[in-house]
Image (cartoon, rainbow, N blue to C red; front, side):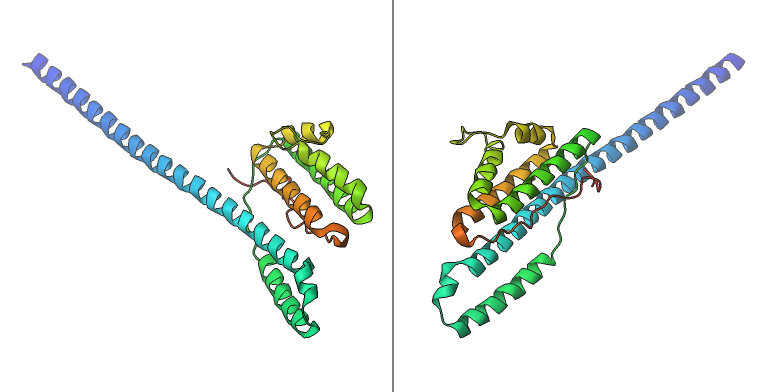
Length: 208
């Protein structure tokens, strides 16, 4: 009789432990499922924010294209002043919109991004001082960011910097250079560089 009671208690204990184990597994599964759903929402949020960043860049570029375009010079002074005021107002409002998608970087990627930004800044200054020389350098660094064979020599040093950057930073660098190339091609001698796409300070890391 005593042996039967002992065996019954052991069975109850095992059954209780087994039940708790299943319950913990269920809770763990539910939490994992919730985190999977949150991960998808986070990625969707980042993609949306990135699209907004690009839309802001395009709006700023279009406004400045209008401001520096020949069409604005071919209308009366009164109309030109009115349109310029509107363009300036829109530019100011667009610049007040701040959208930023942070990128986690290691120390090597931070250094590479910092050097790449500095080199592009130097090119922008050169474009304002010497259009032809600056344009050649701009095309050389842009060639380092495209996959198709470029018609100009590639800046190997800049290419090494870009490769060392985080993938998201590589995309932003390419977009910034594309905008500068379009501005140079469209503006000609009356160039006025629009460069609102400077990448974030690598010291201010965001979240992935």
